[in-house]
Length: 283
Figure 1 (cartoon, rainbow, N blue to C red):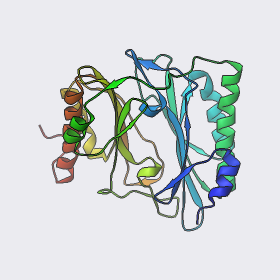
Figure 2 (cartoon, helix red, strand yellow; figure 1 turned 135 degrees about the vertical axis):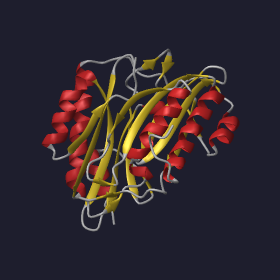
Figure 3 (cartoon, helix red, strand yellow; figure 1 turned 120 degrees about the vertical axis):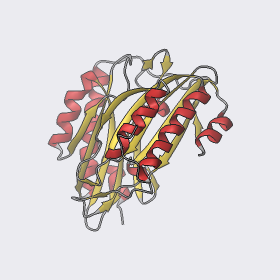
Protein backbone atom coordinates (compact mmCIF):
# COMPACT_ATOMS: atom_id res chain seq x y z
CA UNK A 1 0.00 0.00 0.00
CA UNK A 2 1.22 3.49 -0.87
CA UNK A 3 2.56 5.44 2.11
CA UNK A 4 0.63 8.66 1.51
CA UNK A 5 1.54 10.17 4.87
CA UNK A 6 5.29 9.89 4.26
CA UNK A 7 5.06 11.36 0.76
CA UNK A 8 2.96 14.34 1.84
CA UNK A 9 5.23 15.00 4.82
CA UNK A 10 8.35 14.99 2.64
CA UNK A 11 6.83 17.13 -0.14
CA UNK A 12 5.13 19.46 2.33
CA UNK A 13 1.91 19.53 0.29
CA UNK A 14 -1.25 17.47 0.65
CA UNK A 15 -2.56 15.50 -2.29
CA UNK A 16 -5.64 13.55 -3.37
CA UNK A 17 -5.96 9.83 -4.06
CA UNK A 18 -7.73 8.50 -7.16
CA UNK A 19 -7.32 5.16 -8.97
CA UNK A 20 -4.62 4.04 -6.49
CA UNK A 21 -2.60 7.17 -7.34
CA UNK A 22 -1.64 10.01 -5.00
CA UNK A 23 -1.57 13.23 -7.00
CA UNK A 24 -0.08 16.44 -5.64
CA UNK A 25 -0.84 19.63 -7.56
CA UNK A 26 0.91 23.00 -7.38
CA UNK A 27 -1.13 25.58 -9.35
CA UNK A 28 1.17 28.31 -10.67
CA UNK A 29 -1.07 31.14 -9.53
CA UNK A 30 2.10 33.15 -8.95
CA UNK A 31 2.55 33.58 -12.74
CA UNK A 32 0.47 35.69 -15.09
CA UNK A 33 0.70 34.12 -18.56
CA UNK A 34 -1.23 35.20 -21.63
CA UNK A 35 -1.56 33.79 -25.15
CA UNK A 36 -3.25 35.80 -27.91
CA UNK A 37 -5.00 37.91 -25.26
CA UNK A 38 -6.31 34.92 -23.27
CA UNK A 39 -5.28 34.44 -19.64
CA UNK A 40 -3.70 31.02 -19.06
CA UNK A 41 -4.79 30.41 -15.49
CA UNK A 42 -3.80 27.21 -13.62
CA UNK A 43 -6.87 25.17 -14.66
CA UNK A 44 -6.27 26.12 -18.31
CA UNK A 45 -2.92 24.30 -18.22
CA UNK A 46 -0.61 26.07 -15.78
CA UNK A 47 -0.50 23.61 -12.88
CA UNK A 48 2.56 21.62 -11.82
CA UNK A 49 1.77 18.11 -10.60
CA UNK A 50 3.35 14.86 -9.50
CA UNK A 51 1.63 11.47 -9.24
CA UNK A 52 2.76 8.51 -7.13
CA UNK A 53 1.71 4.87 -7.60
CA UNK A 54 2.86 1.82 -5.68
CA UNK A 55 4.30 -1.07 -7.69
CA UNK A 56 5.03 -4.63 -6.63
CA UNK A 57 8.04 -3.49 -4.60
CA UNK A 58 8.75 0.22 -4.98
CA UNK A 59 6.82 3.38 -5.87
CA UNK A 60 6.93 5.27 -9.16
CA UNK A 61 6.49 9.03 -9.53
CA UNK A 62 5.69 10.90 -12.74
CA UNK A 63 5.07 14.60 -13.04
CA UNK A 64 4.96 17.79 -15.06
CA UNK A 65 6.52 20.97 -13.69
CA UNK A 66 5.62 24.46 -14.98
CA UNK A 67 8.67 26.71 -15.37
CA UNK A 68 9.57 30.21 -16.43
CA UNK A 69 12.90 30.45 -18.27
CA UNK A 70 14.82 31.63 -15.21
CA UNK A 71 13.55 28.61 -13.24
CA UNK A 72 14.69 25.96 -15.73
CA UNK A 73 18.31 25.63 -14.65
CA UNK A 74 17.68 25.15 -10.94
CA UNK A 75 14.70 22.85 -11.53
CA UNK A 76 16.61 20.55 -13.90
CA UNK A 77 19.63 20.45 -11.59
CA UNK A 78 17.44 19.75 -8.55
CA UNK A 79 15.71 16.87 -10.32
CA UNK A 80 18.92 15.24 -11.50
CA UNK A 81 20.73 15.69 -8.18
CA UNK A 82 17.75 14.09 -6.41
CA UNK A 83 17.88 11.02 -8.64
CA UNK A 84 14.96 11.74 -10.95
CA UNK A 85 14.91 11.31 -14.72
CA UNK A 86 14.14 14.51 -16.62
CA UNK A 87 12.12 12.83 -19.37
CA UNK A 88 11.14 15.95 -21.31
CA UNK A 89 11.56 19.73 -21.36
CA UNK A 90 9.37 21.56 -23.84
CA UNK A 91 6.70 24.14 -24.53
CA UNK A 92 2.94 23.65 -24.37
CA UNK A 93 2.15 27.05 -25.92
CA UNK A 94 3.50 29.40 -28.57
CA UNK A 95 3.40 33.22 -28.33
CA UNK A 96 2.98 32.96 -24.55
CA UNK A 97 3.94 36.04 -22.54
CA UNK A 98 6.16 35.27 -20.70
CA UNK A 99 7.55 32.12 -22.32
CA UNK A 100 6.67 29.01 -20.32
CA UNK A 101 8.33 25.58 -20.35
CA UNK A 102 7.26 22.24 -18.89
CA UNK A 103 9.64 19.71 -17.33
CA UNK A 104 8.51 16.09 -17.05
CA UNK A 105 10.09 13.89 -14.38
CA UNK A 106 10.00 10.20 -13.55
CA UNK A 107 11.62 7.83 -11.04
CA UNK A 108 11.09 4.61 -9.09
CA UNK A 109 12.26 4.35 -5.48
CA UNK A 110 10.89 4.40 -1.92
CA UNK A 111 8.28 7.02 -0.96
CA UNK A 112 10.54 9.11 1.29
CA UNK A 113 13.23 9.43 -1.39
CA UNK A 114 10.73 10.43 -4.06
CA UNK A 115 8.99 12.91 -1.75
CA UNK A 116 12.29 14.60 -0.87
CA UNK A 117 13.17 14.83 -4.57
CA UNK A 118 9.93 16.59 -5.41
CA UNK A 119 10.36 18.93 -2.44
CA UNK A 120 13.81 19.89 -3.72
CA UNK A 121 12.38 20.92 -7.09
CA UNK A 122 9.50 22.87 -5.55
CA UNK A 123 11.82 24.71 -3.16
CA UNK A 124 14.27 25.61 -5.92
CA UNK A 125 11.50 27.22 -7.97
CA UNK A 126 10.17 29.12 -4.95
CA UNK A 127 13.63 30.54 -4.27
CA UNK A 128 13.86 31.97 -7.79
CA UNK A 129 10.44 33.59 -7.58
CA UNK A 130 11.06 35.03 -4.11
CA UNK A 131 14.20 36.69 -5.45
CA UNK A 132 12.49 37.88 -8.66
CA UNK A 133 8.71 38.26 -8.21
CA UNK A 134 6.46 38.51 -11.26
CA UNK A 135 2.82 39.45 -11.77
CA UNK A 136 0.42 36.77 -10.44
CA UNK A 137 -2.30 35.05 -12.45
CA UNK A 138 -5.87 36.29 -12.35
CA UNK A 139 -8.13 34.16 -10.15
CA UNK A 140 -10.64 33.31 -12.88
CA UNK A 141 -11.63 34.19 -16.42
CA UNK A 142 -15.08 35.24 -17.70
CA UNK A 143 -16.99 32.44 -19.40
CA UNK A 144 -20.00 32.52 -21.73
CA UNK A 145 -19.57 29.04 -23.19
CA UNK A 146 -22.45 26.73 -24.06
CA UNK A 147 -21.02 23.86 -22.03
CA UNK A 148 -23.94 21.54 -22.83
CA UNK A 149 -23.24 21.94 -26.53
CA UNK A 150 -19.54 21.22 -26.04
CA UNK A 151 -20.34 18.04 -24.09
CA UNK A 152 -22.76 16.94 -26.80
CA UNK A 153 -20.17 17.45 -29.54
CA UNK A 154 -17.32 15.74 -27.70
CA UNK A 155 -19.61 13.09 -26.17
CA UNK A 156 -18.01 13.37 -22.75
CA UNK A 157 -18.55 15.23 -19.50
CA UNK A 158 -16.46 18.30 -18.78
CA UNK A 159 -15.52 20.14 -15.58
CA UNK A 160 -16.09 23.90 -15.14
CA UNK A 161 -13.64 25.67 -12.83
CA UNK A 162 -12.60 29.35 -12.61
CA UNK A 163 -14.19 30.03 -16.00
CA UNK A 164 -12.40 27.17 -17.80
CA UNK A 165 -14.29 24.12 -19.12
CA UNK A 166 -12.05 21.05 -19.29
CA UNK A 167 -12.37 17.53 -20.70
CA UNK A 168 -10.02 14.75 -19.55
CA UNK A 169 -10.18 11.51 -21.55
CA UNK A 170 -8.29 8.36 -20.62
CA UNK A 171 -6.98 5.69 -22.98
CA UNK A 172 -8.30 2.41 -21.48
CA UNK A 173 -8.18 0.93 -25.01
CA UNK A 174 -4.36 1.02 -24.93
CA UNK A 175 -2.90 -0.11 -21.56
CA UNK A 176 0.60 1.24 -20.95
CA UNK A 177 3.14 -0.32 -18.60
CA UNK A 178 6.54 0.89 -17.39
CA UNK A 179 9.18 -1.73 -18.20
CA UNK A 180 11.56 -0.48 -15.50
CA UNK A 181 8.90 -0.04 -12.84
CA UNK A 182 8.12 -3.72 -12.38
CA UNK A 183 5.51 -3.59 -15.14
CA UNK A 184 3.49 -0.91 -13.32
CA UNK A 185 0.47 0.24 -15.32
CA UNK A 186 0.50 3.97 -16.09
CA UNK A 187 -3.07 5.22 -15.83
CA UNK A 188 -5.00 8.41 -16.52
CA UNK A 189 -4.24 9.99 -13.14
CA UNK A 190 -0.51 9.58 -13.79
CA UNK A 191 -0.78 11.77 -16.89
CA UNK A 192 -1.61 9.24 -19.58
CA UNK A 193 -4.62 11.02 -21.07
CA UNK A 194 -5.96 13.33 -23.74
CA UNK A 195 -7.45 16.63 -22.58
CA UNK A 196 -8.96 19.87 -23.83
CA UNK A 197 -9.55 23.15 -21.98
CA UNK A 198 -11.91 25.83 -23.30
CA UNK A 199 -12.41 29.44 -22.22
CA UNK A 200 -14.04 32.59 -23.58
CA UNK A 201 -17.37 33.02 -25.33
CA UNK A 202 -19.25 30.80 -27.75
CA UNK A 203 -18.33 33.19 -30.57
CA UNK A 204 -14.63 33.58 -29.66
CA UNK A 205 -13.10 30.89 -27.52
CA UNK A 206 -9.64 29.46 -26.96
CA UNK A 207 -8.85 25.77 -26.65
CA UNK A 208 -5.62 24.12 -25.61
CA UNK A 209 -4.71 20.61 -24.64
CA UNK A 210 -2.82 17.42 -25.23
CA UNK A 211 -3.35 14.25 -27.26
CA UNK A 212 -1.88 10.94 -26.03
CA UNK A 213 -1.17 8.90 -29.17
CA UNK A 214 0.38 5.73 -30.48
CA UNK A 215 2.95 6.45 -33.19
CA UNK A 216 0.62 5.56 -36.07
CA UNK A 217 -2.01 7.98 -34.74
CA UNK A 218 0.21 11.09 -34.90
CA UNK A 219 -0.23 11.96 -38.58
CA UNK A 220 -4.04 11.53 -38.68
CA UNK A 221 -4.48 13.65 -35.55
CA UNK A 222 -2.26 16.43 -36.91
CA UNK A 223 -4.11 16.29 -40.25
CA UNK A 224 -7.49 16.85 -38.57
CA UNK A 225 -6.26 19.63 -36.28
CA UNK A 226 -4.65 21.55 -39.12
CA UNK A 227 -7.67 21.07 -41.37
CA UNK A 228 -9.66 22.83 -38.65
CA UNK A 229 -7.09 25.65 -38.24
CA UNK A 230 -5.95 24.49 -34.79
CA UNK A 231 -2.22 24.99 -34.32
CA UNK A 232 0.07 22.09 -33.41
CA UNK A 233 2.57 23.62 -31.00
CA UNK A 234 4.60 20.61 -29.79
CA UNK A 235 5.03 16.87 -30.45
CA UNK A 236 7.14 14.91 -27.98
CA UNK A 237 7.45 12.20 -25.33
CA UNK A 238 6.52 12.58 -21.65
CA UNK A 239 7.74 9.25 -20.30
CA UNK A 240 10.67 6.83 -20.44
CA UNK A 241 10.50 3.01 -20.49
CA UNK A 242 6.79 2.86 -21.40
CA UNK A 243 5.39 0.01 -23.48
CA UNK A 244 3.96 0.73 -26.02
CA UNK A 245 5.58 4.06 -26.84
CA UNK A 246 3.25 7.04 -26.37
CA UNK A 247 3.64 10.37 -28.18
CA UNK A 248 2.04 13.55 -26.84
CA UNK A 249 0.88 16.50 -28.93
CA UNK A 250 -0.02 19.97 -27.65
CA UNK A 251 -2.30 22.27 -29.59
CA UNK A 252 -3.82 25.75 -29.46
CA UNK A 253 -6.83 27.19 -31.27
CA UNK A 254 -8.94 30.34 -31.27
CA UNK A 255 -12.39 30.57 -32.86
CA UNK A 256 -16.03 29.63 -32.50
CA UNK A 257 -16.30 27.22 -29.55
CA UNK A 258 -18.53 24.77 -31.41
CA UNK A 259 -16.12 24.68 -34.34
CA UNK A 260 -13.13 24.05 -32.04
CA UNK A 261 -14.98 21.24 -30.28
CA UNK A 262 -15.87 19.62 -33.61
CA UNK A 263 -12.24 19.73 -34.75
CA UNK A 264 -11.18 18.11 -31.47
CA UNK A 265 -13.86 15.44 -31.96
CA UNK A 266 -12.71 14.71 -35.53
CA UNK A 267 -9.14 14.25 -34.28
CA UNK A 268 -10.39 11.75 -31.69
CA UNK A 269 -12.27 9.88 -34.43
CA UNK A 270 -9.11 9.81 -36.56
CA UNK A 271 -7.37 7.95 -33.73
CA UNK A 272 -10.14 5.35 -33.66
CA UNK A 273 -9.81 4.77 -37.41
CA UNK A 274 -6.12 3.98 -36.96
CA UNK A 275 -6.96 1.56 -34.15
CA UNK A 276 -9.39 -0.23 -36.47
CA UNK A 277 -6.64 -0.85 -39.02
CA UNK A 278 -6.24 2.27 -41.14
CA UNK A 279 -2.62 3.15 -41.90
CA UNK A 280 -1.19 6.45 -40.79
CA UNK A 281 -0.35 7.82 -44.21
CA UNK A 282 -3.47 6.95 -46.17
CA UNK A 283 -5.05 9.91 -48.02
